[in-house]
Image (tube, rainbow, N blue to C red; front, side, top):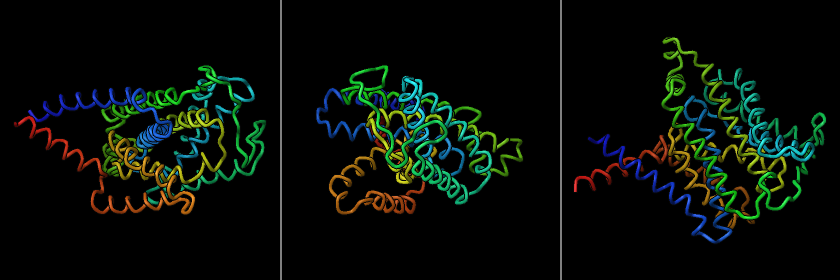
Amino acid sequence: MKALIDSHANKYLLAAALLIALLAPQIITSPSIMQIMILTLFFAYLTSSWNLVGGFAGVLPMGHSAFVGIGAYTSTILYLHYGLSPWFGMLAGGVLAAVVGIIIGIPTLKLRGAYFALATIAFGEGIRVLVENLDMIGPFKVNGPRGLLISLAGNSFKDYQFTSKESYYYIILALLLVVLAMTWVLMRSKIGYYLSAGGEDPEAAAALGINVPRYKVMAMAISCFFTALAGTFYAQMFLYFYPKSILGLDMSFEIAFIALIGGRGTIVGPLLGALLLRPLNEFTRIYLGGILPGMHLVIFGLILILVMIFQPRGIQEPLTRLYRRILYRIHGS
C-alpha cells in the first residue's frame, strides 16, 4: 500500500515539477533571475552527468571540468575553422571526451579512495596548464590563456546562437531531462546493479564474477560524453571562454560538492544540491566577489563539512523522509 501511495504521489510530483520548469520562463521576466536559473540547470546537468560515475561506481572524480573543456574546445574549433554546426560539434566533443575518459579510466579506476581523486585532479590540471601555455595544439588554434571568441551570428539555430535567454533555458532543461532519464535507466539496468555492487564492495562483487573495472570504465565513458555536451552549451551561450573559466578546478570542485551535499548515487540528489548551492554561489559572487573572491567555495566547504557530519548521504535523505511523512499524513487524513 505504501509503495502504491509513493508511486502515484511521485508521478504527480514529477508532472508538477516538469510543468513548473516548462512555464518558468513565461512567468519570470528578470534577465538576472533567468541567468541564475540557466546556471542552476547547467550545474544540475553537470552534476547529474558526474553522478553516472561518481554516484554509482564508488569513486570520487575531481577533474570533470577537463571534459567540459574538451567539449567546448572541440565544437568551437570545428565551428570556427571548418564551419561545422556546433550541434554536430557537440556530438564530436562528446565522443572525444568519452574516448579520453576510457583512456584515463582504465588505469585510474583501479585506484582506491583519495588516490583516484588525486589522479583526476592531476589530469584536469594537466589539461588546463597544457591549453593555457600553447597557442596551437597540432593544427588547431586554442589561443593559450586568451581563449576562444565565437563570432556573433544572431538568432540562428544552425549556429546554436539565440538572442533570447529562454532558448538556452529550454536547451539545458532538455539536456538535463535526457541525463536524468539515462540515470533512471542505468539505475534499473544490469550495469547499474553491477556498478553499485562494485562500488560498495568490489572484492565481493568480483567474487561473484562481476567484471567491476569494465563496468566502471563504461560508466566513465557515458559520464564524460554527457559532461562534454555541457561544454558546447557553455561556449555557445557565452560566446567566449578561456582555460581557467572552463578547465579550472573551481568547476570540478563545485560539481563534486553539489553531488556530495545533495546526495550522490540518487537521481534527486544532484538536483537538490544545485537548487541549494548554485543560487547561493551567484549571490555570493554578486555581494562578496569583489572583496572576497572564491568565497563561494569556502561556504560550500563549510556546508559540506556539516552535511558529512550530520547527513553523510546528503540532504536528499531527510527531505525524502519528510516528503513521505507528509504524504502518509495527508493520505491518512
